[in-house]
Length: 584
Picture 1 (cartoon, rainbow, N blue to C red):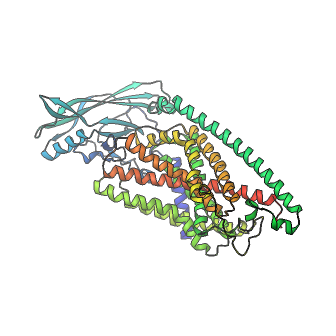
Picture 2 (cartoon, rainbow, N blue to C red):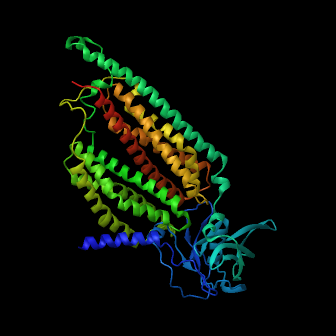
Picture 3 (cartoon, helix red, strand yellow):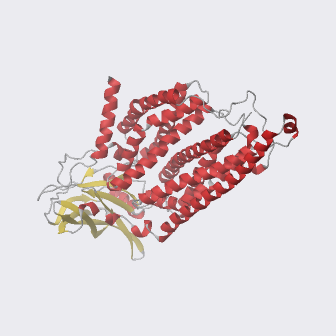
């Protein structure tokens, strides 16, 4: 019963965070309180290196009572830390220039502000979930010397439509030179203006159509689509023509007697029919990868569709919340596909396989996050994940993901675990003949990811820029199209690679098909190095570890997804060609 209650509680919490991602309903009456949240501050060129706004010696407003903000799990995992500003703002109530606090600039405070100005520190705030950005200060040459100034006045121009806030703009004014010992007064003013912007369209100002809908983006989609048409046509023509000749040759061989057949020059993929359905090496790990790949593919597709339908980019942490929820509830798919494949390949230690399949990806994610968390804690960055959030993620893995994976594994072993290969497997493995160097599995694996990477190359640039720079990715229709293109190209390329391998009488196609498709991720990770050094101005240990750590996870998930799709398509192809030819 305890497990049932914990499971229901976890699912309920995730559902609530998906449906009610706000602390209020965005409806205000005149003079209702409007909260200004101070979020993070950090260097402009290191977007992920963020600290609490009050890590700099800023001061708070006079109001100190607030009671309707609740941090969600996804916000905690992303380092979104909100603190009440203490500023009194009321709906449709203008406020003239008003001092809200004052500080005396000590030596320590001066050094902190100068460091922030030198490194182009920006800060982020929220009003009614609308993000606002401002700069801490700016350097200036005075009398042949470098001086540093900070902005001390915040001017808010807030647009409203009816009873809803639809626009917020910040203007930073009143530069003050950072001189030790001076007293600095911080002021603000609020101006309310009626706006014609609809509430549903209030995030449009944060989008960048000129960047995401540039002609290069459209051209890349069209180019990838043409690649799919060409590749599918080429694969169909080559394989059907070649297979037709193979079928004709094998049919002719069937008409000869045994002596002529023994003296004949037999070669090709038919010769390995007794070994082609032999279980893959390291079957437990292979089945765990395939099960996880099914789950990741469905999660990615679901999140893209939800983002298209629900505009998840308008809510803080909503994409991560959706991904966690979908990943948890699709755990039975992981267990069913991985457990069924493990049973079909003769695996017997199914509990160990189930645990590996359930915890493999969460362990990799948590391990990477744990490593980066140490660096974040050393830097006192807001990206440091709280202990309570770690416990919550652990509980989801133990009390939600593991039981659902167990259910899926049991169903998979009983419903889909019966061997059904169209050819029987010989007792003794056939020796693999020598072949050309370019037919070796390692070479095929290295070449297999080039075309799939080429089909998503341009889209990777837009995705990287949206995550590592100040862009909001919203063209999920493009992403869905690129996702479909990637799947089709991956299947076609992997089928061709597998046909060449089998024609060379090498029956080690399972891992080869998986890794040939997964090698796309290796090219993506190599591209991430180019992007880091030539397209960004990131610097520092924290940002470097964060970038390459999470890019490794991104590439890993992409590789498992592509590898699974490549294996599934190839498996269908292999079963088809060997079920058509009559085998004695």
